[in-house]
Length: 315
Image (tube, rainbow, N blue to C red):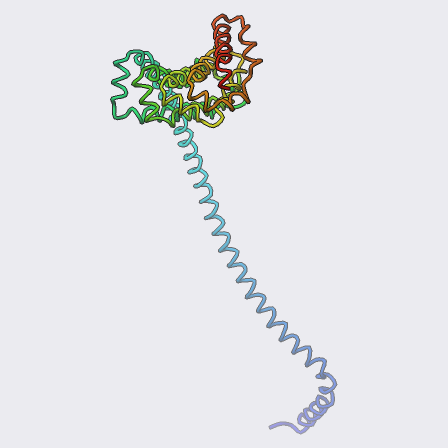
């Protein structure tokens, strides 16, 4: 049971609320509630995104730690490999030095042995003879090619130099025999081309001993009719000889003159090369050498001048 007075009071309050609520609950309040709901939704979404970012951060952090671990491991492996490479280089250097030393000793001995005609016949009779002389040419070429501008005056007493000189000496001794000349002209023309090219590449005053041995080899080859014809047909051969006459070493000049004399004494060669010889003949230089203090060089230069006078009609 509700008392009448209480009911009347309740009715009065309801009526008052009926009058007040429209004033309080206006559109601004409703819009604020709607905005609040929207903001709560955004906050919730941002919270989810933040949680996802946190999880991604943990994931990338784990990957970074794994990458750092791999980096440390790879760095250690790289250091180990570098050490192995340095060890391998050192071993290779030691092996190269050993091979060069051994090659120098063997070639020097073989150079001495090749003074014997029977020994040369045995060498040329080997199935490896052509291969040996091909390798000899490649080795001499490699030696000259590796000379830097600052190292043109190579220490010819080094193992490497003795190795190359030994090879050149063997070629010279082989070419000194008729059977050797025929073998080189017939089976190793590449070696002859290589020596001529290397004489072009070596500057005056450079590798004098090697030049002398190569010039001696070509002189020996010029004794063979096929040999003198072959080397004289090499493009620019006579201008090369004129250029070599400018070498400051008298022994080089001596062997150049000897080779020239050998070639101009062949009528067929002189007839064919007369124009080339006439156009580039360095008579002033030969005249200068004919007055050299070196007696052998002086005599040879004078003989060559006489030979050129006798053959002047051919030129």
